[in-house]
Amino acid sequence: METSSDYIKWNNRLAKFFFNEEMAGREVLLYVNRQIIHSIGEGLGDVEHFINSVKIGPPWVTRSGLCQKALQAYEGWRNAYFGEIGHLFGLKTAGCPGKSATPIL
Image (cartoon, rainbow, N blue to C red; front, side, top):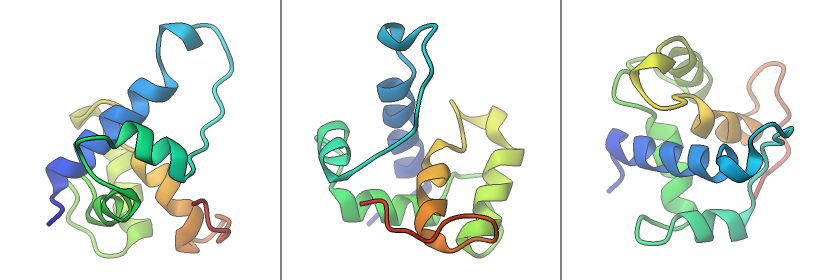
């Protein structure tokens, strides 16, 4: 079963994948697919685990609904390493106002 600590683990892996020494000084485009999730999720979980972890959100989130959780994660991002990265990917499929509802995976 996924927990808010799983969200943080996924979030940290996404941050390390996109923001590393190789990418220093370069434009970073955030994009994930099943292959990336499988690669960074080794030992943590699969795509379904990732999606469920994003739905749960970080430990400091108390609001209901993915859009509200993403907003609260953004507002409290200092509590974790790039606290809202996981939700950036989750919003793509959530149908949040102003966000595309196109599946990302």
